[in-house]
Image (cartoon, rainbow, N blue to C red; front, side, top):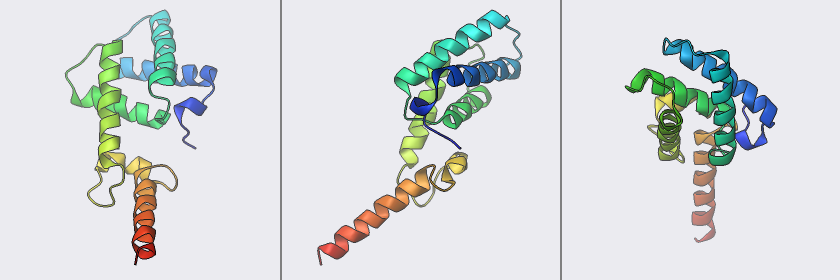
Length: 135
């Protein structure tokens, strides 16, 4: 089950971040020391808790995947992963409430109770109720 970052225990989040950083370095063809991976994982986990608590960890994974494959940034820094996460968050925000032409990269969020379709359906239902109540 996907849960918001703010609901993940910090120790568990750090472990997830460590796995993500390991995968990221591998995909970029880099071989940092284990200490560097762990250090970046701790920093990432703290940043996620402080600045992105309403995203789900799967959103972060997708942000990294997209950033690695679709940007020219080949070295992991805080600025690099912030730009990846902010870009991905903007894609999510731009598609929130949409019922048509939703970005295909967000299909993972369309599972029941996880994202954009549910929010869009709730908004549409509320609008229908308001219209019907005003007639």
